[in-house]
Length: 442
Image (cartoon, rainbow, N blue to C red; front, side):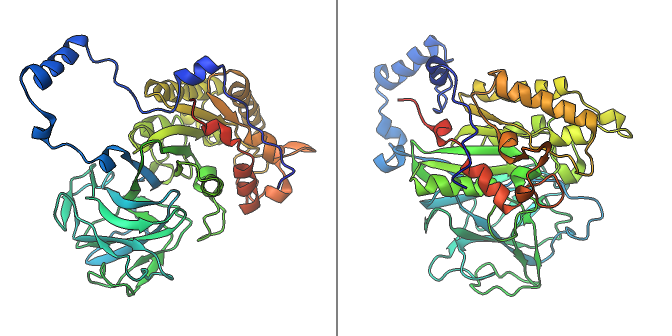
């Protein structure tokens, strides 16, 4: 696709780039008196740093950065695909962006109504299918224990383990769930095959017996690696187009995956973490299908992620699509969607993050297309392109639209539902991104 231009705007002025540089927040808000007290404690009172245990130089030069992620969702009522687990092991297959030699995971019971017991957990590089690669299996502990109970609504972070985990590698995370768990916190559309065992704890089995497979991830929301302190994560925050709907399963052909491949090829110190949810909207929830609205989940899925430095936003088409006759309580205007974008921008800037806006792609022919919705899409896209509110833009609309019928996807990029791109479309989207959007100011 080398003939495709890079439909991306440059950042604004140099001063603004410095203002919103992708650096970790420097907490300048501490009052001077607190700084003075700290100095007295450290010097005048003779308290030496060694008394508190000085970190090793290697630890001081490294930080935790998310290499993979998935936004948790509430289970759908009476859904046969997610009845929960009792005395079973799940082996979840995820694909990293950056690599590292030390790793940990986050597990979430965000939507559980009862406490969740993790009876055992392991991480390994994947072999074939449900198998783990020889010599890579590591036991995961939580606060030093091999098991832990997660309260409803909470998450836990595992202790770190040493594991040589290459960039762009498949990783297997195995969880033993004594249960009964009830319907599980999950990410419904994994576009990846995951494995559920017959009764028993098979976390340590390289060849885990498989009762059935599932196209979803359960409880696992992040894999993080220790990386050099100048490594940052790009959070791609969006809906089903970011989540990779209609891409080929088990191929990692979502556009954020293709972006991660480009960055890895250039040895960039940048992770790409996919926080897309199929059906997601900026302003309204969509139950267990589309998850909490974008404004509600922005802190959880973006701002509190390990190593976040950049945010790429592609949301709004479902707000427009569901603003149809018959759903008046959820009807939204273009101005309301724009106001939602502005809220995301303010919150990202508050933490010193660069935030990049993506134009919404064409959707004529989709099952919720309407002429007035197209007007809203054009209005919001004009704001993204020309307002200067975002620190940069990615013009996906200009890339994938049909020049002879601009309200439709180019046929070569259309998956068939006239809303989601196919694999070629997702790759073209990633290939068209100007990587200088993620360049640090010196």
